[in-house]
Length: 369
Image 1 (cartoon, one colour):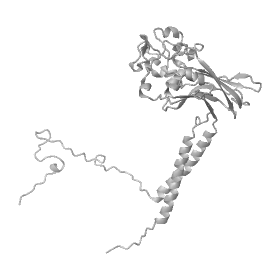
Image 2: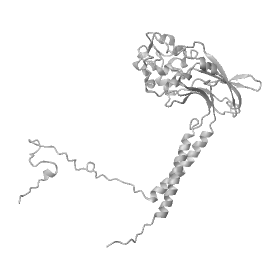
Image 3: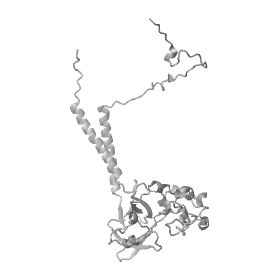
Image 4: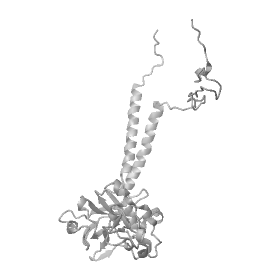
């Protein structure tokens, strides 16, 4: 019979032939340390799912989510919104001639007017949006085609980033602002008029400042050399290919809204995630608490048609909307809450019936021999 020897070091991962620490032939042990963490002996809590815990959870979630969803849905429906398409696709559209004949190469703008009627008055502040469809601002190359250092008034004004290609230079001059996003700036001009009972047109005052994010206006976008003399600051640059005027002439009457800090330009530079989107264009502020901001009646939208969209099968819209504490009109969130709450409540009822019907546990079951 062969004798077997026992070595505690072998069990711990140390070979029997190993000498003391630092000696030749020492093999380091791969055995984890004998601690609660490495040996997975930490105290833990594992929930046991029983009918007494699962059923109340389903009912509580349903009773919480359904009222919240109803509240969100009702609030969204109380927001008034009016939308009108002025693309000019149909022959009976007032903008049909402009849509068919206008292109980026036109030097003279095309004008058209669209009449519409508001059946309900709009209270509080009214926000005017322009909307585009089938316009993919989320394309990877389109999103990257910009120079944030240039837009922040940095030294790359005369040496734009290569990401702006092919809208980096034109006639050997650097483009300011460069890139495809800036080159495709929405430049339609919209004016709103109210037609009173006498048939006269009353212009609706549209506020063009306060439409951009504060961080964009004061942090991300800055003019080179301040706002004093933009003509001199942008000397040695040229306008984007599809623009009719340079960036320092976007709003010459207001130095705080000209150049890179023009709020129409800033709003456009914040790209949309979906091909159908809307962007804030103007704000119609409420002046009196006794009269609505936009009374019901007839209106006329005057359009200077500068932005062709039929080449990519796009659509253009003008939207008038009020807002609430939850933002603009969006019934999806309320519907989602109601749907989740209803499903949870229904599952709770089904599981309760199953539990009541098939819970036949017998504590006095026979034990087989």
